[in-house]
Length: 340
Image 1: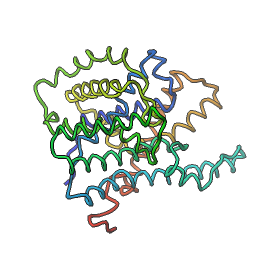
Image 2 (image 1 turned 90 degrees about the horizontal axis):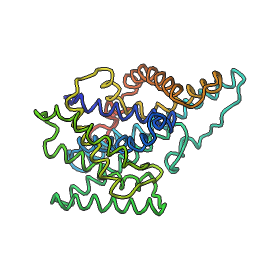
Image 3 (image 1 turned 45 degrees about the vertical axis):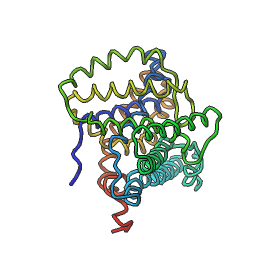
């Protein structure tokens, strides 16, 4: 039986992926609106994805079954979007040859660079999937080995401190494992919210919006730049206290919101958007800059954003319909690790 959708969770995922897309269009966009707005949004934009994943963490039927599910839902889409980006690059290369435009550089290294490099073009945002996979695997091991709740919390923050130390000293592990250590407390928060029954609706949910407004100003003024991918960290306490406050306030506020079908649809398929939005927005942005002479700013960002998400709508339908096993809509590996 398919799991019933939780509208406010889909809305939170939609908000995250839309903010991520706008940031990728123009890193300075949010600061056009307010000087420290980008830093404030960094406090929850990506950490909230780990938080949401933590909400749905389960041990399932042992390590093999758990790993199979995470391979299906995370690693298979990662590989698929790497290949998908390469195919899109080949199409662009052929199209440029046909119209006599300058060719783009593309080679087979594009298929393997994401597996050993920290930075790569076109599908770079999916680094998050590698990180999320390791967060799940590490948390599973901690859950199995450490029974007291206080021990689990202590272990998670000890690992996060290790990851923080690595970041400060520019020590990088393969496959985003260092970023995964830093992200563990965000995942723990989601797991804790589910464990202690905070998912259930209560009569206090109507106060969530007021709570969000109350914390918005201190978060805005106290936030520093956070980038888990590039190991850009503020003070250790800011790395977790401010995101915890921001995420919990947003979670509380979103619980009382009505279901908005379009936004929930984008949120439900945010994985597909994560893997494809950069492939869409880069050529659109280049078109408006090179052909129409537009410059970076609010207008260009909004135009590219709207066009990107209009294109994402049919692309989501295509991929979930014709590639469901590659986009986590259906399991790629069946129970027992057998293909059927």
